[in-house]
Structures are given as C-alpha cells and as structure tokens.
Amino acid sequence: MNGKSKNKTKRDKLRKHALRKSLKRKETAQHSKDLTVRKDYFRLKGKKAESIIHELAEKTFLTDWCCPNPVLPNGKELCDLLVVFDDTAIIWQLKDTKLDSNGNFKESDVQKNQRQLLGACRQLFELKTNITLTNPRRGPETFIPSEIKCIHLISAFFGDNPSMITSREKAKGYLIHTFTKRFTEVILNELDTIADFQRYLQDREQLSDTGTSLLVLGGEEEVLAYYLKNNRSFDKFKNRDAVLLEDGIWEDLKKYPKYQAKKQANQVSYLWDSIIDRAHEGDSPQYELIARELARHDRFGRRILSKAFLGAHMIAHENENTFRRFMFMEDQDVVYCFLFQDDPEPRENRKGHLTAMCHVARSKHKEKKIIGIATEVKIRPTCSYDFALFKVHEWTEKDQKVLEELQAKTDILKSPNKLFVHEDEYPE
Image (cartoon, rainbow, N blue to C red; front, side):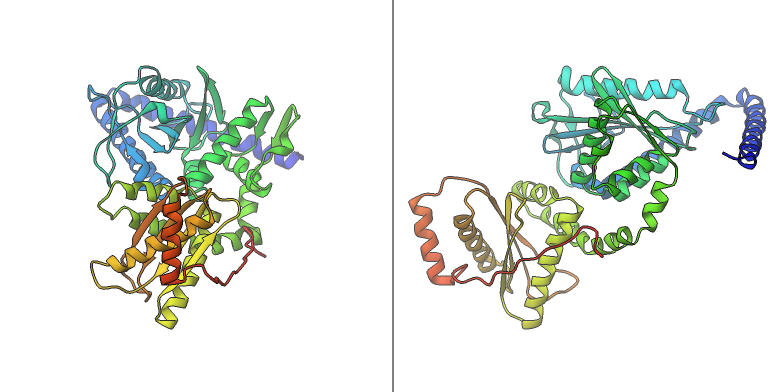
C-alpha cells in the first residue's frame, strides 16, 4: 500500500468515526423519548426483511417447498423460514440490525440468531416436536424428522454490510452460515435452484471442516465468485493453512464474457420452472412427487431440458402434427417422455398415449425413473399439461406383453431418430 492509499484509508476511518459519534448522540437523545415507537420500528423492519427473504426464497426454491414462519404447537414461531425438499432442511433466522461502533454485527444479535437456530434444530430433531407445516399450494403437512438427512442453518442479517464477518461458525455440532443482506440477494439470484444452492452450502461446509483459514477482503460473494470461476470447487484450497481472497472477484466475474453468455443462455431454462409450477395443478397428491422430480435439476440441467422440450414443441407447432421426443441425460437417473398432441377434453386419448410412451421407455431403461409431460401441438400463451411418473419396479412377463401390444399399435420407439447433443454451461 502506498502513502496516498494509507492517507485515504486514515481519512475514511476518521470520517466513519465522526459519523458514528454523531449518530450515537442522536440515538441517545431519542432513546428515552419513545421506546414504544422504536420497538415497533424494528418489528416493521423485521417484517420487511422477512418479506424480502420469502420472495427471494420462493424464486429460488419455488413456493412448493418454502414454509414461512412455521410455529410450534403453543403458537410460538419456530424460525423465520423453513425450506424442506426431500431429505434436506434449510432453517433460516433473520434479523434487521444495526452495526456496532466498530462497524460489525452486534455480538448480542449474532448470539440471539444462533440460539434461535439451535432451538429450532432441537425442537425438530431432538425433541421431535409435532410441527405442522403450511404451504401456499398444499394443505397442512406434518414435518417428519426421520426423513431429513441434511441440515443447513443460515443466520441472515439485513441492514448495513459489516466491515468483517465470520461467514461460518460452529455451535453444538452445527455449522451456521452468516449471510448479509447483499450476499443473500446475490446467492439466491445466482444459485436459484435447490440443487445449486445446497451444493454450495455443502462444499462451503466441507471447506470449513478442512481447517483452512479463509480471509476475505470483501463479502461472501467473493467466495462464491471464486467457487464459480473454479468449476464449482474449492479443491485448490486443500492442504493450505490459510487463503486470502481479495475484494473485486465478484465484480470481475460479472464482466467475464463467458459468464454473461451463461446468464443469457440460462434464460430458456425458466421454461422448466414454469412446467414445475404447472405440475401442481393436478388434483392428485402424486403431482407433488412429479414436481419434486422436475425440481431436482440444477440450472444448467434445466437449460438442457428446456431446450429439448421447446425444440420438440416447435417441430410439432410448425408441422401441426403429433410429435414425440424421448430425453435422456447420461448423468441423470431419469428419462423424459415429451408428447405434443391435440385432444378434446377430457384429454383421455393424450393421457393414454403418454402412459404408453412411458411404458415403452421403461422397457428400454429399467434402472431409471420415467417421467412423461404432454401438452398441445400449437405453442400458445395458455396450454394444458398432463404428467406421468413411472418409478423402478420389477419388469414382468405381463409388462413385456403390454409393451409388444403397444409397439404393434403405435410404433413407439421401434425405429427412433437419435440425436446426440453437447452443451457447455459457459458457452463461447
């Protein structure tokens, strides 16, 4: 650091110190004036923070698996947000707070959030308190702790960004992630699927367990940027006692041409998110299971699936004929059957055709799950959807007989045209 930089840093510190003293005098004068107003102010700010986090979380994890403000049987709030997806639970506790005189989070606020998070864990997994979860889409559901294998705790602070934070602290065997408002917005917009988000938390926790000391000159977004630039990995940090990450990595990443190309290429992937939403319009509990299967894919996977679905739909639209496409990704345990067919209500013919496709696909891929998605031939603003889910089961002689009859009637997968496609997450 040169002399000019040192002087500038000193002036900045002096200005911040003078500002803090001025604010402190004003706070002291107001403190005894109206405690009730101040209490309501923080309550209202807290509600604003909760509404922001709920909106961001629903965008990332989708409404289907977000449970805002779950409560205990006695009516007391368990936490600010509980995300439950398959065997994963993510517990959020938020606080809208001011920084202390040193520009850091107040220790009392940090400890309070940690107590609330650990208390929620105790209620859910030690005491196994009977918790009823509510969701905007589905009715009340009982939380089943035995189904949860992976637990993440997030302490989020909304307010000014501190000069330094400990992004991860361990308490009673749990690693607690500390998010600022800025980083909460960054990560929930950047890793906006449950798969991407959970993978980052797991990799970050594994890095912490290695004992490597990580010093960040900036916010946690610098760590996220490094992670993304290095193929979603912290492997380069292995076997190092300490690592220093400088400020500016996140801003540089956003300017990187391949990163910008990736963001542009991902636009089509949100078609898959809309299909997940449509899966919940069925009147059977099975539709939530189908939506969950669709939501397992990360953003890159959703891009590939969306392009395959949209490409097939465009062929059907242009030719105005029934069109079938089978989608298989080598690293996934699922095969998709896309069907585009017009059929008057109640669409029984289309549903039967989709079921037949799934049955035939099941005979070719017995070790995989088969998911069917059907809609109209023409692309239009409002389409109807049908879904089907075939899980792994023993293939019997009866199944084989049905297969042969189906292929004789429909020629499904008798002589398919095969197309192999390669996609880069970061296009040139």
